[in-house]
Image (cartoon, rainbow, N blue to C red):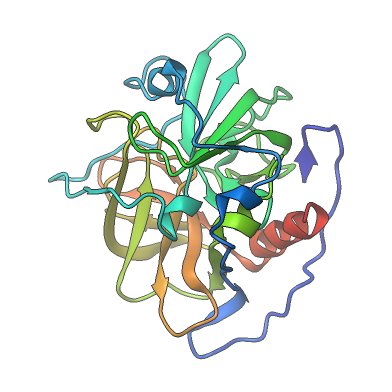
Length: 289
């Protein structure tokens, strides 16, 4: 991994890979926060939502990062209970790209201070890290539940700026204890394509009112050893969103199996959480508790 501090480090898998009945080779459980916003340290509660949030979600133009494709009929539905779990754990964040203005992506909270997302939301892969990250939890229109900043960004050393590659994932280390307050999502590595439907939930730029959360669910298939493919409807602004569902009765809980990255003409796709990806995510949450 490489990060915005200039550090490069190797992470060896450190989690148990014992398989269970779900076919998961690695599982990290969801957690429940205190739910008390007065416990938030380092962030703001009920922040003002500035105009640049909506501007970052303006229709895609130029070289802004995006993963947009509505496959056939637009079947997305709006999420209005954005302060409830797990939706409050899927924030919109905006950031500055040198020479390209402000843009936006979705992430998902998987530790106290760690947010998973797409690498193309963090860096161009050519040595330039994006800046001025502002993370909005429970955003709905002109209101938000909480806002945090960041301390560190990280992406795999193989990330070269190719959107949708196996290396298109990364971590934002927040400057607040959001997970302790809001809870965090679980995640797991699967050996094969799972049955049933899975969701991609986030903040698409094409929906009105602006700054609102939308979701869609559909089956997930194998694209290759590093990618999932699906006909889940998405749009610019949803890059970095979790591919997830509630795994009731399991430790994983509200459980992610991948990170949405890419739009296509007949299917969309995202990075699979493999043992290597999952162990690296876990290592960052342990390094920055």
